[in-house]
Length: 282
Image 1 (tube, rainbow, N blue to C red):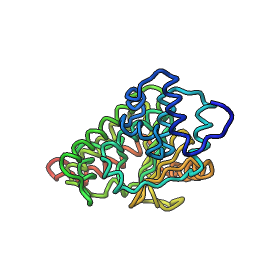
Image 2 (image 1 turned 30 degrees about the horizontal axis):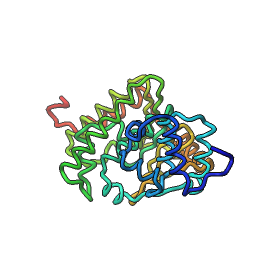
Image 3 (image 1 turned 120 degrees about the horizontal axis):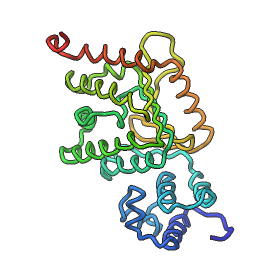
């Protein structure tokens, strides 16, 4: 590729050159990168500025060396923190964004996820996910169905060997009723079941006791290299090592006060029983 530094304008052309040298078609690389062939074409031809996520996914799909990947990511990190408004993600197709997240998770060996707002997507039941995507601004019925299906497909990674998932959820999330009580009860049963998977570590921060911080946002840390943060208006992506380290430390503080194992399952089951009709409890 030569010693000249990459510029933002040249990233697309360089990605195309790498793909052509690999002998892979655009369709094959796009499929591996969990994006449409049209989007990849626009990136390669300079009609769309790729995000850091896009660059990482394409390079992973091409199987390039760490050295080559770092050359590209140095340029992409020039704007290390990116915010994409939810309204834009919805306009592009909410299910497509689920596929993008699926691609990121496919390239993650250790995922740490903190949730102070809702049940994590990887642990949701279809009914709970449907309720999430029915909140304002609600997705149209067909779009919501496709988005829920895409979210459910992501959950297959929980069963893959070589993966490690550490979830920390605040207890108030278990009580935050955005659906019918029976749907919530089934969702909490799902948490108990998934907590027994060898790839999954699930902690719940109880309401009782002193807390190390405020649950200002929910976020996920991917292999200490990438953090995704959700706000009301956007999804924020950062690869800045200083920011990543801050989120790792924040996660560790909440994880240190969470309940695990049988203590956690007992807590979740107690909350679940509060949602069940009296006859079912007895």
